Amino acid sequence: MLEGASGGAASPVVPEMVRGDDEDDQAMTAGSPAGTDSSTAGHRSDIGSAPVQPDTIRRLQAGVAPAMALLAGMQLRVFTRLDAGPATARELAAALDADPGRLARLLRALVVTGLLEEADGRFRNAAEAAAFLVEGRPGHLGGQELLAQLWHADLQTARSIRSGQPAAMHDFAGAPDEAMLAMLRGMHPLSVAAGQDLARRLDLAEVRSMIDIGGGSGGLAAALCVLEPERRAILFELPRNARLAAALLQETPGGERVTTLAGDILAGPPPGSYDLAVLRALVQVLGPDEAGLAIRHAAAAVRPGGTVVIIGGGILDNDRRGPPSAVLLDLTLMNLYPAGAAYTEGEHAAWLASAGCQDVRRIVLPTGSSIIVARKDSSGA
Image 1 (cartoon, rainbow, N blue to C red):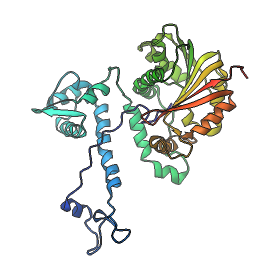
Image 2: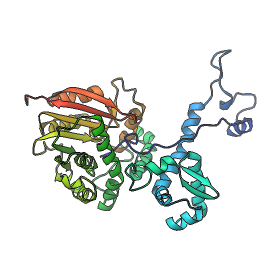
Image 3: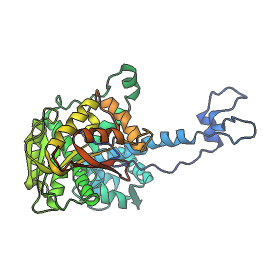
Image 4: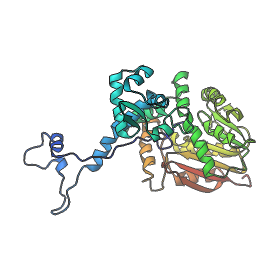
């Protein structure tokens, strides 16, 4: 299911804004009527007040190009190739089967963002890129397929609002197996990282059995299994996703203790009884009625006294004004799904209460994503 860019996907590195000089300001406002104030000259709302400057607008505009450079670098595998050592643009282009002149322009842009460094005509990964953008590294963020989809969807926001329909519909059923496998593989490092993060945030020492509902590649379940030798997990996914995920799990530490089970959480509770059920990036792609149903079916598969966990970038404060990343993801979800949306902490708590859960608490992560934890009524009611 869809993960928010704030929920583990690489965040764009935006260079510090530099105010333009007078010549730049004049160029940006060419065509303004003579004798009138330009937008860059500022607008005085009250006599004697400081002029308003378009600082926020400039910052937002300047953030797009660095993000696109990051995405291109990930798609071309620039950071992974540079892990072997510094290289010139021509050497790197030969290794990546790319045009050297055009690649050099991207490399210089990545130097400006701070992701690459250049010395004597040779480029190398900066510390952050080396830690998080090299494929195969434990901290690899991956997810370039997801980033590309999310950012393409964001461009369609006005169309979605005008039409009342998602203008960048996320069609799981229509995608060929190759495309779906590529997406699962791209999101796999994020799923593994989410499992590791969950283990750091919660005491899961007593969890021996768990079910990862709508868990995509199953990386979260595998990450939790590798931390506890006696733990076993079920990945409960739609039939095709379950089949494709099985191959990824064979390559993942802990994946040998994750069993794939095909099913639809909206059709009914999964079979079995578990200490822990996790719904990650699932509730936010559903409409409110379906979200409540999915949570109810998930809780039905948890033993009395067990734990239900909901993780997602689309969990809002009750006033719907934050976290900022969740407010913005709410727009993205509108472009991708007919009824998907970000939901408030209170809405999640109400769904969990209706499903027989209590002691609901929320952990807001530094990324803006949230973990909601609840305990199933020990009476089993």
